[in-house]
Length: 596
Image (tube, rainbow, N blue to C red):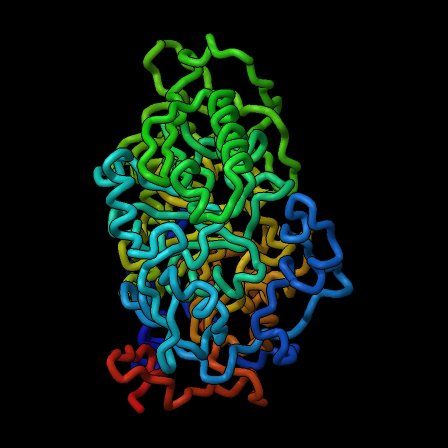
């Protein structure tokens, strides 16, 4: 399934790109030649044991128990050494079905895709999740908002400008099943949700099955994998984080000047709630004093306390904080250098301003205007070698590329691909060209990239994360519908094996998910050979200027197969039935789903 692969034949579809593609800085010819892919010898990768169906290599539960529990160290990333990496294909569970399309997926997840019922019992009163036949339903509740996220968000909107595009990017720490992020989409706010893989079984897996951006993560000893000044709003609702100095300093680092921090639940309004929380008064009072003291040190302004919700705002610049006493210790060094770096008990300095009313780091336009406006990091020449002109050229280039992709895969923006990941996001222009309520893009900034532009991506109102593709991504298997990889294999050619990167791509890709890889032809030939043994169907297409141009594009689709099946990479298996909920209409894509 790639576009209408099964309906019209891939060769006809692929050749359509030849008439319109202009995805590089080369200009010239009008035709593209499809490269013959027959007779490629391949190494056959075998399925992993069924026990690895939900394997998360860097968040493995058994390995985690070998690390200290202090400060949640054991819940942080701990990747397997080279000798213990799996070199097999992670199977999908039996009965796996293509997730519901958005927005139905917000409310329904097939039980077979994530067969874990513990939260339906543990969080029953709080309306997190319910089990109903062959599906889970998500009423939209949370620990702090059992009556629904909509009511809770509307309450926040009386204080925070959520409605007008001022708040576009949000961070939800300890997110549960990410219902806050799910319902913030209605306000055109995109939320990066994270929670550890812990006793709350599969919470991040549920979030991603629902079509909500999320990663496995914890606020422990390591800095969050996000750039400074990234989020318009940060949120914690009974997230069980022991808020005090260092953790709040880390939130301050990723919160943009003028951004908001929301804390709901204990210890806020402890005087009226300590009995219902079954917590000692003195303990709760001490907790809130610590939080208030840390907020004062950070020069945050407390703008409202509503029942059990407290809202602070970070100052727009440091001028209003100069009279504060005591003075904080300021961090030294690059605030975006965070990969596996320990948190520090220091405050990230504001960018310099010249006028008392200036916003440090520049004014952010409301979304969607900020999507295509030159970000401050570029206009202020904070990113070496990237000018405003280069930014605008990059934007136009990827708009053309995405249009060309649509000629090959006509359903790329139809809603079939909800969860998309860009493995080497650059300035975020691929995601910007795709921007639609039907989908979201996880923009990944490789830690070895020549230029760190993840801050630029956030300034555009998009989200992303730092990552090293020599390691496993912080997500569950089968969480992305479409993977885009521009120059990834050339970038990592001297760092790690292409086989390991491809196996990780296969792990996080859903059955019948699509892959688009752009790279040099010699690199793609090696990639294609490996992919041939991974139950991927592939086609490589020449550059639009003809076969003499060294850059090519490899299109691939992962075959549908589940645990217990003994099939070869040359076999295409299409199931005829999937679980059906009697009151839900199952969508059929690529002839894989059919009525039962």
